[in-house]
Image (cartoon, rainbow over all chains, first blue to last red; front, side, top):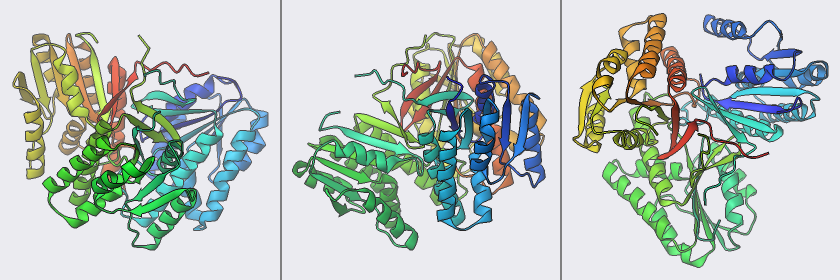
Length: 182
Length: 182
Length: 182
């Protein structure tokens, strides 16, 4: 790994994404920004945010950025060693709650991908896989699932490293492993 | 890859299955049939079908085959270089809407697996992973999920190559990669 | 593989987990206990349990253990070659139905992990990935999903081998495969 790596950590719920992202990011230097996309608005979320905060050492500065991730990365990446964004799926929820305009959301996804690629220092992104269950009956949930899948593809393309987490185990899928079988 | 490969591309929603399937299939020759199992019946599906059609070059002939996939493969594989079937999960929906007879559906799955194995030219199958979410409350959804899982296992066994897609990244899981770790 | 391996088999619904677990376990010796966590209470479950029982040869002794898995492993592992527990996700359902006390459930997960590590003979655990779909609307389902993810992480950490199954194909993710790409 190099100190300008762009890494996407992707996995299901409770698959160890956030912990693995922290471990990777903490190897990349001392000046660290944790970008929380979560704006907690109920007890369940407040508890989750607190648990995550306790997992981080106090060497992290925390920014709450519910919407303008591209702007935050462009502004702060030059000033630190590593930015960790946790997580993209909540960011997409925030966008969907703000606007019904799919083209605008798509543009913001593209801008984020561009900002990640252009960042001068390491960026680690955490995102959820939400598309491997049954098709949701709810139309908004289907739209969200589509958006999340597109965002994950865009970020995976922008990053030089993609890690799929299962049961706490990180599986690096980009760069692809060599399938040496015949 | 050889020009008689049978390949299953499997992944969650918006994981890049269809695009990867197209890329693979277009390397296998010029005479191409795209088998669409989707019979679009609402605006959302029409939009999805149109988007997929625009992604294909006009070197593809399109067949709409909602039910008899085994027959279509047996009839057309000898006449082209490659057939691409997109996707098996919609095909199973079509079967479930036609008949409540589980044994009959199982037989059609087996016939499809046989037709794929017997096809003289390349066949690429696209299917969704739908079983990695929470158990659905709806009994029909659970039946569908079971069927989809069995169909995916039958097709994975019939194919010589299986690719799992995550965030647009293809991970070849059959033939299995060599785990060279101790 | 050695005859004291601790193996977690993890995958979505109908991904071939149970069949693969049986194949692995049957290589580990003749004295075998199958630990069923399922206490079937409707026709759908009775049918599923029967189907699984038919897949096993009669060299297996079956124990029904809905709750005290740690105790069953500690008591019986010294007396056999291999114990196969199928599955952890139903066990967690059983715990959730018995108690609303999250700390108590967490403690039982930890005790199970300890019992698996301490077992003198091979143990094979089967569990479902349930966290890769859309966030459930139902709060209990979200709690269950969290618990299942934590349990899977704890068992993956306790085991020396973890296998992810997709469409009947086992992919060994622990020990990690060597990513030999640059």
